[in-house]
Image 1 (tube, rainbow, N blue to C red):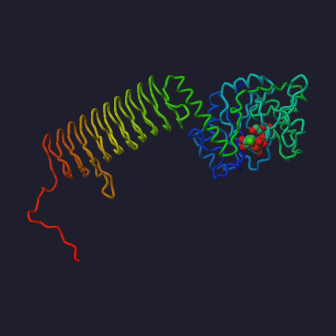
Image 2 (tube, protein in one colour):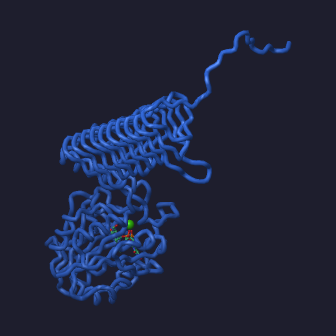
Image 3 (cartoon, rainbow, N blue to C red):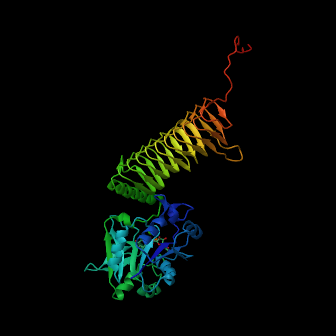
Length: 453
Ligand code: UD1
Ligand code: CA
């Protein structure tokens, strides 16, 4: 049977106390809903329908590229009502999987087992909780078969004592869904159309309802507050750290790494504490990342060392480089192999070829640097004239003395030496020493000014 997924995501999430729609809150750097859509994709769903309501425009805009069908539930009258809105979009030959936009950590393997457990009937995902309060309870008969789901507010004291709860995720056959949804009423404590009443109708029709009970309650945990979001963030990061360790990455402390995107590591990568990886990050074999670094959308070549407190963004770094401590790579930086970037050096939209070094206190922007160039301490490219940006070119084998300012556009030709403290505003000739600073003078007989008494 082809699979069609419905994601219920219309709820407001009042307890988040935020202007942002709940399903857009980030988990691992991506909206909650993105994690749920990933699961639908991984299952090979033929169609994914998202029932949305609160913050509809913002939610659609955030997922403008996603291949989903949007269904608007203008008024949130319950999970059953949400499914009624989605029903016209479903095909009758499909197996339907219902996911929640705010339940992001369910494993794809678990969902596959749920679909199997449903077969041509119904299956619900459940778990056992020490404190089941707030959830719907799974009521079973003496033979242990699921009979119905009762919401806490409608439950008797005896039912409230049941520890097995409804995770909300459900799989069923589309052919029967329509007739069951048509029968839903809202005569209950919350005056809502409960999707869970479908279980009662299925049993009445002789359709088996299976429960797949998961041991890991976090798989069905929803996000209703910032506290729950933080809890799930830790779980996501724990899983990510576990994956990295399994792949052979050395983590100084698996509890102190944050991956907000995808981190790909070759063999023998070592990562110290408190590093944050955002977007797409790729680390080559033997790369070492020191403590407290942030890497966003960067590729790092083999055996490169990134030292403590470095901030690297949208850049490509070659092999055997040494970056940091306290280095800043802004977007558009490309470093060849064996490049050294030291402390308090800021690079932007610049290329440094093999073996070049900028080890101390520099700003290099919109610059092309050749091979084996030494950029002295305190060197600054003046790339901005107040209106436009200009490029600086430093060819191979140049030596830029400390505290040089390079006023762009300017070209420093191959093998140039620039004397310390120079302000270079004209192109320099190949292989010569260029100095551009006033001559040192000492005034004999000079006396310091005296204070008037
Ligand atoms: C629901 C279940 C409950 C289960 C719990 C698990 C019902 C009646 N109850 O409870 O048995 O234990 O989930 O978390 O189904 N939504 C809509 N439109 C609506 C209402 C909800 O799209 O009109 C969406 C929400 O955005 C959310 C999901 O459905 O993603 C669940 O809604 P929520 O209000 O959290 O469900 P509960 O009533 O807590
Ligand atoms: Ca909920």
